[in-house]
Amino acid sequence: MTTFLQITDTHVVAPGALACGRSDTAEALARAVETINDTLPVLGPVDCIVVTGDLTDHGTAEEYAHFKSLVAPLKLPLLAIPGNHDRRDEMRAAFRETEWMPAEGPIQWHRDLGPVSLIGLDTLLDGAHHGEIAETGLDFLDRTLTAIGDQPAVVATHHPWMPSGIRAMDADNLRNGAPLMARLEAHPGPVRMISGHVHRAMTAQIGHVTCQIAPSTCHAVDLDHREETTENGLVLEPGAFSVYRWHVDWACLTSDCVPTGRFPGPWPFAD
Image (cartoon, one colour):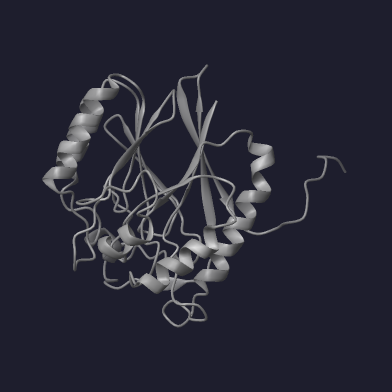
């Protein structure tokens, strides 16, 4: 059985600082790491953990060093793609020793997990909040999908290609997702697209492609679907991480959203 985890939008800032002056993102990430390590024994073998962007809040070398120190206790290999708050050069320098970090260009990679392929795509557009996939990214996806044949694929991006109902976030989502979706629709095997950016757990079905947005490990984006609302806000809701498991007998990928922290239980279902 193949299992991998996803965390997203950790928004790590300099040690001792708060994101937006309110969110202790370092404490939130440390709590997520502790929860993940505590949960591993009941999950069975886990292949890796994917960070779908916005590792840091400002993309500085100091913030990446802080991020790496916070995730160092993880008992899993880590892969990452950038978000709009990241900076490629600083992120590349921070992770240059890893086998998944390309020496130049977009930060994208392919990991064959056996029953399923995991593909990371770079949607960072320098200087912008919204996302775009470069032609080199689409070319990389074409080559990878061709190489894996009809193997099931999970494509990870920071910016999603689905509506959230939060107008300010939807304006800053992936702008050129149509060619990406056309490629995923054409893939002969099952496909899942997993993303971050919106800081909320959401799912959509677009054609035969299931699209998911994972919640942040730290703060959430205010849930406000009113058409007249043009700016979103920060809400200190509980953080979470996602668990994905490929079930060979069912030929399907299931997902679970796990809140971070320690909670009472488990107890038997009895009076």
